[in-house]
Structure formats: structure tokens, C-alpha cells
Image (cartoon, rainbow, N blue to C red; front, side, top):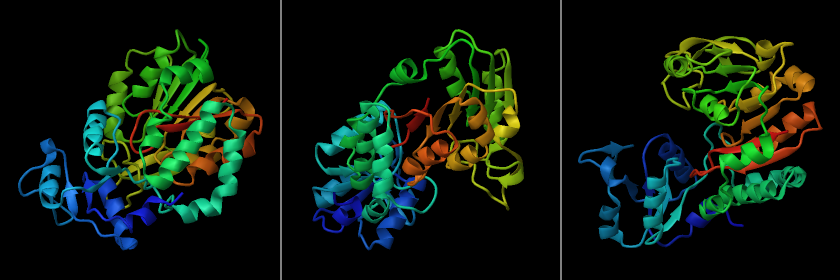
Length: 347
């Protein structure tokens, strides 16, 4: 399969970018690095305003570009799981060629033909050990999407959270749940939808403003311990950027806030845990390293995000299975463009 960036070098229709922000920054940087020309940036009508600029480019509407060029090649530069956005995507794809380039949320490794060629043996191995056909289908489609930017691969492997809780996790009423990246408590609330009771909940959230919302949203829950810390492979403190939103936990020595760094092993100790959810903004491999004793001693069920870095698809299973080789490994993708909300389950 030809990767998206190679394909874009040969397209005849003008390339335009849909969306602004960090995702557009990353995509523009790749286009510039690969010598691929684009004509400009547009936003949805409700976000397009006169005299609005992004990277010194006027932010126009799709109609502006259609009037000037006619047919277009559109690159989506943001992420969403909202149905109204999917509806807008469908309307665009009916008139224009449409792609959602895969660029890593963290790190500089691009999932292109060269990266895939170098790692194909590892990718084939991981796909081969997955525990069911849904997982294998999901894995193959995620790889194809990452190479091509074609969103049909994402839509073809979407799954429901009900299926995952019902067929994979099978939670009991005696779970001890460790939520890493608890945000405002949304995944704690999700957990409670699928259990009638539980032993204890640990909810870890590094962002101090978001942590206040987590406190408010969980204040009526029993046996719940909230921890304001970053999860990594060793304990300590560091300055971290705090923006009150997802993706805000990168080290920032100049503008950050002094924040505790903990490991899973330091939190759990010998108390035990039965289920861990980890969505820790690109630090998943560090989380695994810092949870080695917990994983080895208790073999908790785990849901681990695998979409932040290009290497995650292969490195996360390798890391977990190097600690305990007796896990069954599943993969699921939930509605999102690009391939966010893609997770591994270790059972």
C-alpha cells in the first residue's frame, strides 16, 4: 500500500487543510518536510470568522476554496468523535477527496511506508497473537488507516463499549479499579455503569484544574481515593504544563506547575488491584515499566490506550507480555477520527 504522503505528492487537485490547532501544526510540518504544497486552511462555517489567521494563513470556508479551485483534496487536521462532525465529513467526501492523516500525538515517528517496512515483522507478530477475530480485523484496519489516511478503515472496525465490557472485561462486583488519566471522572462513571458494586476506586489525574472537577464529580462515591499526580516509571516531582484539558501533561520547565510523579507500584504496593485503565498521554510504556511488580503479582485486567505514538501498536503488547506472557490480548477501536480511542485489553 502506498502511504498517504507519497500519494499526496502526485495528486492533481489542490490540497487544503480542514481545521486549525495542534493537529494542523503537525500536518503542515510533515507537508513542508516532504515538499508537498497545500493551498490553505478552512474551518467549519461556525468557526470561520473574518480576519482569523492560522500560521499566517487566512482561515477561510470550504466554499471559498470550492469557488476558487472546484474539486479539492481535503486533509482533516483535528480529532473528533462527535456525530455532527462525522456528518460534516460525509458531506465533504461526497464532493471531494478526503483524508485524515495519521500524525502521532506525541513523538516524532511517522507511521509511513518506511516505518512500517522496518517494523512489519513486529506488527505481524502482534496481529498473530491477538485473541479474537474482531481484534485481528481491528488491528489490520488501524494499520491500513495509519498508512493511507483513508477513514473507511476506521469506520469498518468501529466497536461499542458495551461489547468490550460484556465480552472482554466481564467485571465483577468485587473489582479494585485503578483509573490512570481519570480526567473529570468520565471513565469512573463508565466503570460504574457496568458494576453493581466494587471494592475500591483509585482515580489518578495530573492536571490540577481538572482534578478539582474530578473531586466534585466523585464526591458521593464510597471507597474512592483521588490522586493528583503524573504516572511514570519512577517517583519524584517535575514541572508539568497544566492547561485544564486532555493532552496537557508534557514537561514544561518554565511555565509548568510542580507536580508529583508516581508509579503504579508505589500506589498499589501489596494491596492488590483487579482492573487498570491507562490513558496517560503518551506515557503508556513508562506506566507499564512502573507497574511491573503489580502486573507480575496480581495480573490485573488492563485497558491501555495505544494511539498516542506510532510505536504503541507493537511496543505496548511487547512490554506487557515481557512481564507476564499469560495474558490474552484484545484490540478495539471506538468511533473517532483519526484513530484515537483505540485500545488494547489484557485479560
